Length: 184
Image: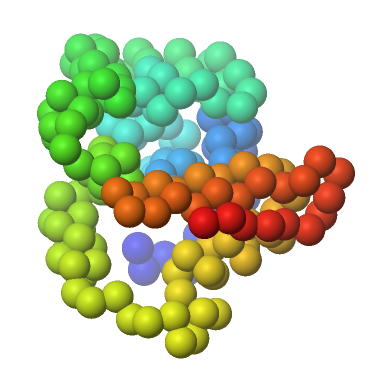
């Protein structure tokens, strides 16, 4: 925004906004919601004078319940904004609704991508994946191997399953075991 003097204030405001939003996890799209609202609060001079549609939809519960209750005063301000009444008419996106919209012949992975990303990005990813898959001559670079390696570093992940028409890969962490194993 060409206002570098406001950078520290925006960072500080991000912490306040995250707390007021009920401590959402700071990954896409929640990090964008928090960051955008914080910048708008700092740039606008008045907190919550401008509220993006995504923030309103977040407070309407379309992304599930936040980890902690949002600040009631902020929730009231967001949900009483002029555009909130119109956005209340939106139906929350559900897996059943997405299956109906996109069809039952696509994989769960593609369904989730189509629910959360612009169509042109999903189409580009699918097109890129249709090319020949390189042999696992360098297994450390294979995306699935990298993912499983990363999962083993996260003790909170105890089970993960990938399934295609041809293969099933499961990861289960042994009870009380920090080591991992994968079966395919």
